[in-house]
Length: 327
Image 1 (cartoon, rainbow, N blue to C red):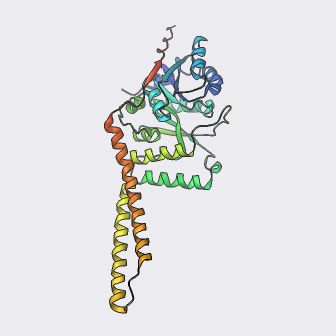
Image 2 (spheres, one colour):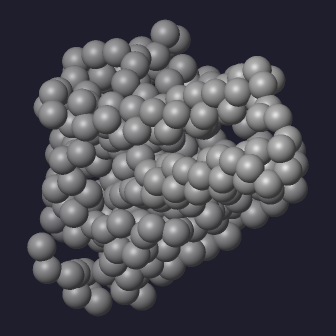
Image 3 (tube, rainbow, N blue to C red):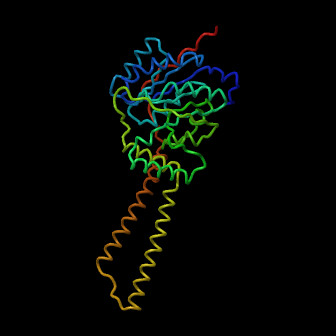
């Protein structure tokens, strides 16, 4: 798809807003009307696409109610909970916009920042992404350490930049959306995919708003699981670290064996007994299990890819909105 001309970028024909939602009815009840009000006029047509990721609350009923009230809302309802990465992919697959905005349904992504993203797109940037400020100060020292180590690993084996404080709050040109759709992989680490496709990008800092209702379901364990997906999908560094660890352990074992022989031959010292043998076996067994675990993660990714199962299943998708009549 060719790039939009400056005249076309002045006011896009359709702006799609993709909102993955899991039990966010209370937040969507005020967010969707507010988006409709504040984004009116920035494009000739607005499309608010709510991706219901197997919610158990009244998300579906709320969206249908807002559609009946005449708001520019569409519903993409998945057959069950597939996870945020799959829901975001489903939304990008269904979005019809010349420009696509992805943001959370909890209301923490400021609409004011969206109004800063649109001028950057008009200037010629294909990707405008939000960078959260003040995030690290609110995290524990352990979590900051894990995060720093994760990004260190990711940057060791990549030819693209992965911003550490950027997430799914992004404004994407249609060309970028089509590029993302062409990626067939099942291990969806969207933050990595956004960075991998490239295109001209610009970062905009923002401070997240307070969550009005409910609590996040994206806990530490889900965050760690997503980090493992990201590493195994975009980096071979853990495998190389396994190889290096095996090499270092082999060298150390050889040196230790030679030292024991020399001690016996030159000084007549007795060879260490059961304690040394047990400690060595236990250590090597731990190293082997660690290496097997890392290899198994990569093998599991291959297993998921070769099954070729769809990333998500759609239970309901409301039709595209009618185009506004030309004046």
